[in-house]
Length: 183
Image (cartoon, rainbow, N blue to C red):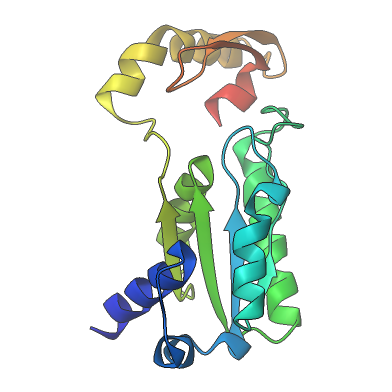
């Protein structure tokens, strides 16, 4: 029940629902750091209002720039996001955070979910309108040929070779290195 309560209470804070002091005390903002993860095509500034609200409530905040930002446009593999999130968590811990929450919007929500499945020390994960799940049938139908093409490029030992690949869920074509596309 306590775990569910943590998720529910943080959801209330993040979504801007009316909260009272009891909620803030239950979350212990003074010892809780929150990593905010932006969505595809966005940047850390897109989460500034949310970050400021959480800072005002007493939370420590980190908002890393991720490889799917508008300026990066998938220029780095997913593993770069993993490093950025790990760095943000390390900085929060260095500032004294004993609890860590990872909250992400859209593709950042997918990253938050991934983090929650690999870091058992995480206090909570918050998914705000998480993006597509690439393993789903719709995504595979949409991007199946691109996935096959990227795998063939990797088998040919040309990981950095760029090609046109279908982006899920928009269906737009992006020019990317095969290794980045599959990450």
